[in-house]
Image 1: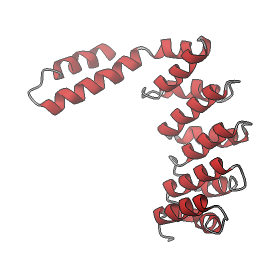
Image 2 (image 1 turned 45 degrees about the vertical axis):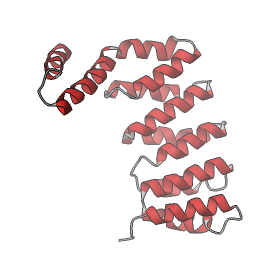
Image 3 (image 1 turned 135 degrees about the horizontal axis):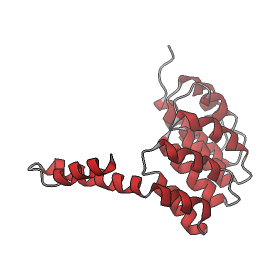
Length: 189
């Protein structure tokens, strides 16, 4: 099946329309990633530290359900940088099946990892998120800022109370972020 796609895309590189040629080029890049999937998965589990992190980011460019299990496993790595990479990729993908795993990973001992998780949660549309994000409001400032941004990114009106409370915080940066996030929320039904 991949060879059939590749042949069609290679033919599309000769199309008379420039946009079609550009699209075919981008699609071939994606297809190459699919061909390298098994190598990337091996690199993620068995490579050196740098290779594992690079593999996690490379998996973000592949559109396959096969990338989720290895990335979720990477969430439990001893290496906080690998955990961060996995969080970023999972957040970009925003697949609903990964949301519970990201929420569970909010217990990570590294504030930097938790900050990335808080940011990633903004890519999901789930009615449980306002409560989860509000629970982060007493954490380190970087985590709170990321949670505030995600509240705005979700647009969920249920985030309003937590953001109104953040507007009362003594730190100007938090108040500023809360004001911006409030402006992004949907109107209540």
